[in-house]
Length: 342
Image (tube, rainbow, N blue to C red):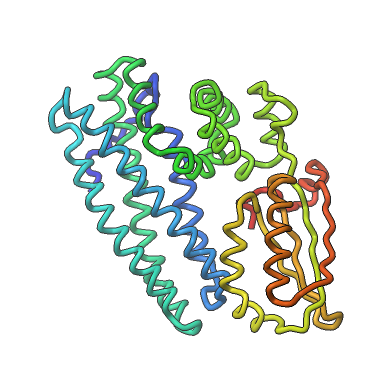
């Protein structure tokens, strides 16, 4: 595969359909490969995080290939018949590889704790092979396809093609890419990308895009972006730390982790939650959590829902404290204020 990658580096195109999204995909693929390679897969929580990273990267790769096959390749083939044929064939091969990877993920999930590391070795090998092929494939798109597109279409036509791709993703689909693209790009690239979205995207798409920036970048980087884009003070990140604890009679440790796994998955999907640290004090007979939320609204929405959840278990006497993080000082002491921090 990928025998069409030339040795020379092509000049940067005027309107680049590949550069930024490929930076994001490379980051997602590398992070997922490192995660599954280093994870203690015998630990259920560590395995779940690693497998989620693989699934996210696989989903992004499928969505990206679909956008190219639907929009870019037909446009190029219409003026240069057959130019994208080899890339379509590679997309089909990648789809087969991703099916196999998803099967390997399922085998890790279904294995016992003792057998998960062995199953994980097969997943890692398959995923690493896919990452290598994807890196070569993206390099070929940038150095072979993009110059042909730049020669065949003017800037307005390329921007229109780019707009159709972005529009096909929807707000949530675009945000899923931006969470990986923004941390992988230089500050000036982020500003240019988000400026275009701020000026041209529908309101819900811009809101999802800015939320993706807040989820994936440090507060300082978001503040710099807001300044560059001329956003009002109200649009700056205002994250909230929520500390909650309550009387609890157990179970504790691994037994608690096994019992709470379904609820943990539900909490992880809570809108506006960046992360939760689960806390327990067997000697004091208390349990709870430390949370980081995107906003006061998200924190209050979660608090109300969690109080109801706890009440259903017969838990009362919940203590809640709410704080604003000092982003500058927290960054100096390596606090995990970004969504992608371990």
